[in-house]
Length: 524
Image (cartoon, rainbow, N blue to C red; front, side, top):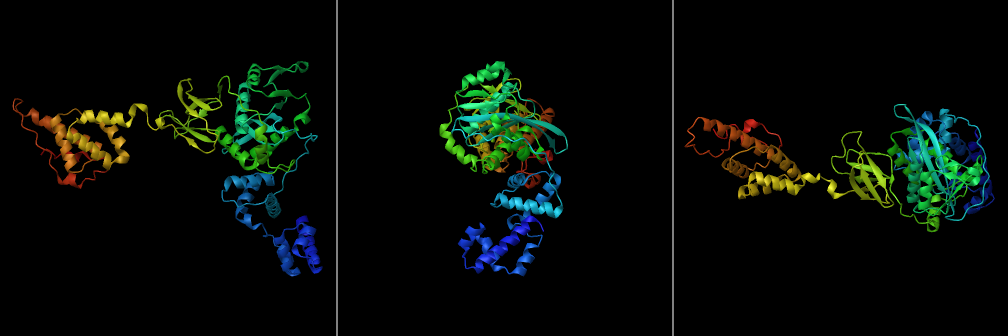
């Protein structure tokens, strides 16, 4: 019998004993720390019923029973996942997951490990850090970098590098990931992203003596890189560098780096750096900043709300910070920090389309890979929003008004042309632009008389389709040309009006494509 079942046996007998002594549920709860519902259930069970219930292996938490197969397959594939990671994956994959306590998930995972013999691989103990006194609100943040290997869905290994910053008092965290080693410029970009996420910055930031930030310790007179020196001058915080081999000075961020590796990245498939950063923001909101911190026993996001007024304001950057290139989505948007920003039509030119972003505190500027300016957007502080510029809906050279004017010139400004275009817009409102584009591209040269007769025919017989009109003009023009060659040019016969044939009456004129034979008999 495992420890958990022994514990339940002990508590059942304890509840029975206290009940026989005349204690009520509240008094028993104070003595045993059990939930009142559990006390009630134990009181209603006799010894035989309790033995039958406790020995039943299928006695899993009812709220999680429907996720048994998912968790089983997850543990079989990645046996080293902790119960906390399993809880996070459940929240990530199931929006309808009921509200549960982390202990319930832990018990659920333990039962599945026992039932299916999925042992958790042992690991060596890690180094211990001395607990330092708590800092004041807004006084300090700590920064560190991490790296790990991930696997794609096809089994390919990819090395990922990440930047992590944590506010020392509230433990509110931010991470930013890239698929190449960090440079000073990319580290500065990560700082600005963290400041935006925190909506401010602390008075002091603690760093390792990393070559990304400094060239030489120089007996305390640190020689910083040019990019980091320029960055520090734009903001009011003080950069503090730890001595070498002194991880205790920034033990909080060391724990965050370990947490990112073991909870967020471990066992996760890699599907692109943009997707990974999006998943990271969701993980921060869902787990890292939303669950009670093991050390402080407080929720980081709630503590951050207290700490926000103590943070320093973000100063306007002296220059824009160019980010790495971003992928253009096929719906002509770019994903940036959880929001979708529209791009002009034509920017997407295939799966490998990319653009460059330059970010200030409040504005995004978009450039092509050749550094040609494309557009700007005001940055949104929300998540999951689509920020759209109405000018991006269609190319500027093909606005609806310009198309309409172009087609009006081709069809003439007479009453017939205007009436037919109005009826076309009314009957084909969703395809009005498509009809105009087809007319502008395919309209053939023809006489005004032929054009007006075809328009009259279309109005009288409700033919409201640009392709049908073009086909009719082309066919009638061909027949007229053949007829003119066989007659005296001095006295050409009048062109007979189009006649409605049985074939055309049966035609479905709402279909964009039509058989040109429909119009062959119009002038017979």
